[in-house]
Length: 140
Length: 140
Length: 140
Length: 140
Image (cartoon, rainbow over all chains, first blue to last red; front, side, top):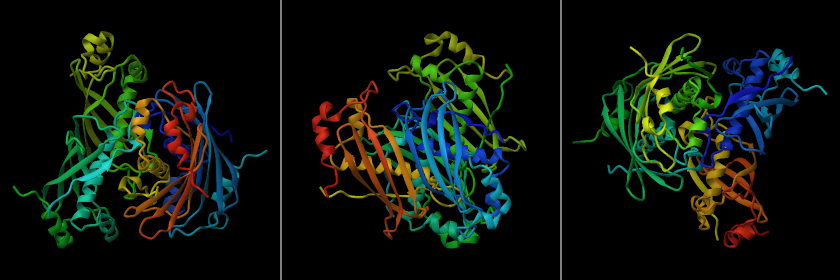
C-alpha cells in the first residue's frame, strides 16, 4: 500500500498570541494523522472502540523546528516505527504542504486495552487486526 | 447561600493571533462556572454522571463586549434563570476580576438524560437533586 | 457562485466523556466554515489580517439538536444573513454529511477593526472587499 | 524560595470519550505550571512579551502513567532542569492532588526570541531576568 500523508489546513483557533500554532496542537495533529492512517488500511478506530479495544497514548514527544501559521496547510506523515502486538509506536513528520519545509518531528507510543481497561495482546485478542498493524511496519 | 463568582486566570493557550482569548473559550468558561456553582451547593457532577444522570447543553449564546487577554483573571457569575425539573437555564456574566469591567454575557440551557440518553424529569428521578437545583433559582 | 458546504471529519480529541463532540467545538466549526466561505469567494483572511483588517466575533449562538460523534463527518453551511459594511452576520447549519440529518443551527455576528483595534466601515476602507461581502448576502 | 506546586481541577471539556483527560491537555498543563512558576518568582510572562521577549517551545515530551479524570484536581510541579541564558529546560511531575499518585512526567525546552523572532541571549539582553531564571535551577 502506498501510504498518503495526511493534509489539513491550520485553523484560526489553533493559533496563539505569538501568531503561530500553539505547540499543543501538534500533538492533536499526530492523533488525526495516525487515525487517518488506520482509515487508509481499512481500520475504523470508531468501530474498534465499539468492539471494546482502546489504544491510549503511553508517551508522546515533539520537536518544533519551524512554526506553522494560520494560512498554512500542513502535511503529516505518520510511520509505524515498532509494533509487537502489545505496544505500537509511531514517528511523525509535519511539513508545510506547499513548500515541503519540515516544521516538526515527533513520536508516540500506545498500548491496547479492553473495555475493562486491562492491557491486552492484540495478537491473541484480534489476530486480523494484529496482521493489519504488523503490515504497517516500515520495511527497510 | 451566598453564591461566589468563579475566578480563574486566562491561560496562554486560550489566546489567538489577535492577542485576545479566542471566543470559543468563553463557552468553556461558562461550563467551568456552572459546574463550580454545583460544587458550591454540594453537587458533584462527576458523581451525578456515575449515578447515570447527564446534563447536556441544549443551546448556548455569548455576547462579547471587551476582550479578555492573557494576564487577566476573569470572574464568571452563573445564575439559574429558569428551572422546571426537565430543563434548566443559566445566565452568565464574565468580568475582569481586577477592574470589574464586564467582558461578556451569555446563557445556556440544559436538559437531563439517563444513561440510555433518554430525557428524564429530575423531579421524579431524583427529588433531592431537584430540590437543590430548584433552590438555585434567583429570587426576585 | 454556487456555495459549497464545508466538510470535515470529527476529531477524536473533540469528544468528551459523554462520547459526543463537546459543544464548544461547534463554535470552532462555525469559524472554520465561515473562513472557508471567504476562501471560496477568493478572500484569504490570513491576507486580510496582514493588511490590517480584523473581523472579531461580536456574538455567537448555537442550538444543539443531535449530537455529532467521533466517526461522523459533518457538513457546515454558513450563510451571510446580513451585511451593511460595518457589521456582518452569519447563520449556520451543521449536518451529518452522510445522513443529511440536521445536528445543530447557529449564528454569529462580526464587526471590522483596523490594526489599532478601532471599528471601521469596510465600505470606505476597502470598497473591493465590501463588494465581495455584499455579494454573499443570500438573495431572496 | 519554597516553590509551590501548581494546583488545578480537571475541566469537563478536557475529557475525551475514553472518559479520561485527553493526552494533549497535559502539554497545556505544563505551560500553565511553568508560567505559574514564573509568577511565583515575580516574573509576569505577559509583561515579558510586552517588553518583546518571547519564550517559545523547542521540544516537549510526556509519559502517561495513570489517567487523570474529571473530578480530579491535579498538582503539577515544574522544575528547571537546565538553563544557560539561551536555552531553558523544565521537568514536570503531574500528581493527583488528593492521593499524591503520580499521573505523568514530562519535559520541555525553550529558547528566547526578540520581537523580530531572532534568538537572543537573556544574559546579555536582560541580566536581571537572567539572574531570576538562573536562580531557579534546582540545587543538588
